[in-house]
Picture 1 (cartoon, rainbow, N blue to C red):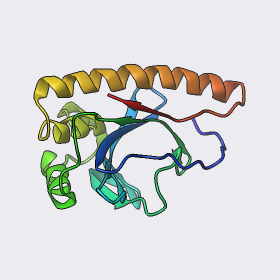
Picture 2: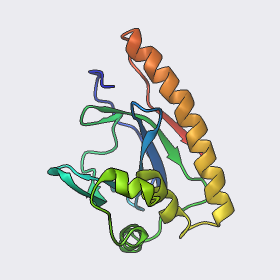
Picture 3: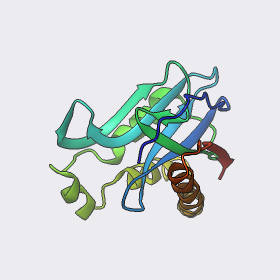
Picture 4: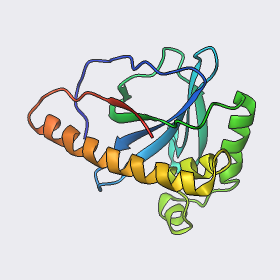
Length: 172
């Protein structure tokens, strides 16, 4: 679902790690990590298809958000920015090396990756388990799913009534 909306800057805290979710049509969510360093420089890290070759395999992609974090990316509304309370940002180089190490290889095709347990959500939890205890990562995952489901319902209602959706920021 896509809806034209005003581009709105979302303020994020320095030295933080966030999870973002975008609603998918099948009731699931696209998950990504947002890294904010000590001076407020922001980058997005995700497991996704290559935007320049959607027929190829999925892979880890990281890129700077030089203009900041916004309420949508391309035509997709970001449901929420979920700050991980007990996870100060490690060095950028270390964070990127952890992201790159989660899935060192990818199967050709999305369905083959899903059968192998490789997805954007398992990418995010795979990074977090390198930073936090597994039990805490499970709590974070459950909280993000619950809040994203609520946000997804609100977004759908907003979309159907042609009302703007307000991207939330929350702590998990």
